[in-house]
Image 1 (cartoon, rainbow, N blue to C red):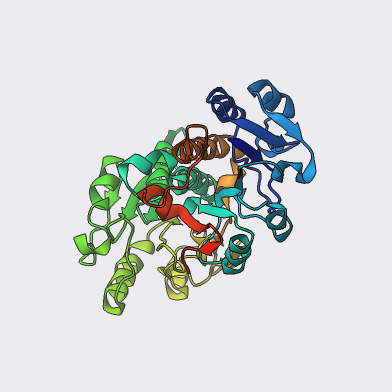
Image 2: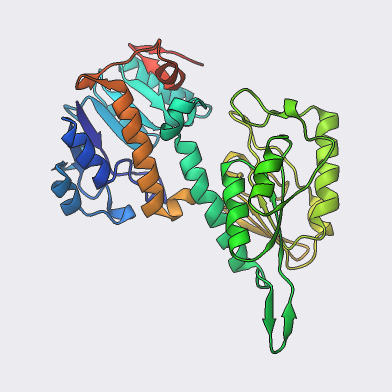
Length: 368
């Protein structure tokens, strides 16, 4: 199979879809890989590394021509989409809920589009789960951003000038990003607590040495069959807000990670809660890409209110491009091997992984 790896054109995107190690394994498996010159520069992979791995370097739009599959990190621009030839497969983070026009265009061009966000949460698809791998990076980096902004140290320190109490860090949402944030804050010496409406999250939070903020809203029914949190009814949501409000007033740093698939992030921290927090406190909202978990969140900006700083970073994984690309690449490599049978692209819509991820195929839009 012939695979193309273009330069990412989205603003501030430094990751690359396939790193040289993955390219080398794909070439060894019999595939041909074309890499656009400079594709790996943002993640500190040189063209020479790709050549050594067995890739062919190409310029400009040549990366889209005469290939069976194009692998990107982010959705293609209109110009890139128009360069995809009929019969080509596209594998990338495609934001299915926000790119309806793109998918109509891809279907009309007979491009088979696979959205990496839609990898099903089943055991045999874990090694393809891009959302989890990139959330790991985001959870780690969120704590570092908060620590840099916080006007006090995280760990307890005993010094000649006296003992410094550890900072209190509260993590809302105990998915992959939240658990990584908890682990990172613990490593830095903070006193950490976590909250999630899913009952199963309690043991995971405690296993990392943090306390779990229990509440009557925590239940077995709060997660869907894929393990994600479900939207709450209004009375449940109000009880969640009350629980968070009582706890948040004593915290120094809050990391919010709560998201619901294919829906805007739930608003879990209100203006009133922020006003009740201590001056100097910091909130890092890593759900900003889907609207954010606070009513003060401005995606991509930092807001200060009543002495509290609300940081809303976008695309955090791209700020750690080396390891983010390494994990992303392995996820993509595994998926390519899944759909490449006997050396060629095989789109088997009877397969639960392929079916879940395919958005367009054979000129048709498979989901709306």
